Image (tube, rainbow, N blue to C red; front, side, top):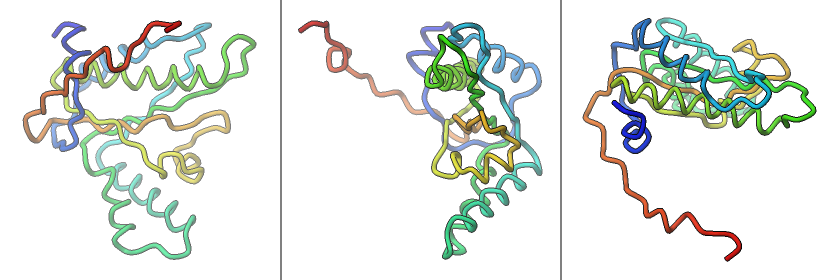
Length: 186
């Protein structure tokens, strides 16, 4: 698949099953991530892979964070939190590592980590791997960050779910460029 095809046709695959990407496919996913824009070559990202029984551990961490932040949490909400990581055989947690730098503001470093996440999605699509970017409140929860071992200068940018699509991928909606692009000054 060529780059333009991946850019123009990638869509999220929310329903994923085994198998997860193999070692060679993962190597390409992360090599693609390393090509994200990186002002001053700070490499403001790192990645955690979660699979197998570790997904259940992550589910428990999410449920614990939910109960710690709210006095009343329904059993349904706890079950949903525990099940979240089980929606795919592999999760990649994309983490922004914000470093003090005189020319690269923190926001730019977080965006660079987001670009690395997007590169993983594109590389997955190019290899026929299903992927979806998910977050939600728990992705940004300080207890979850601590449980994942994040340092004080780190933050979760994305939780990427990867696996084999359970069904055929949808065709992406074609947007009119003129609806979103204009010349300046008008």
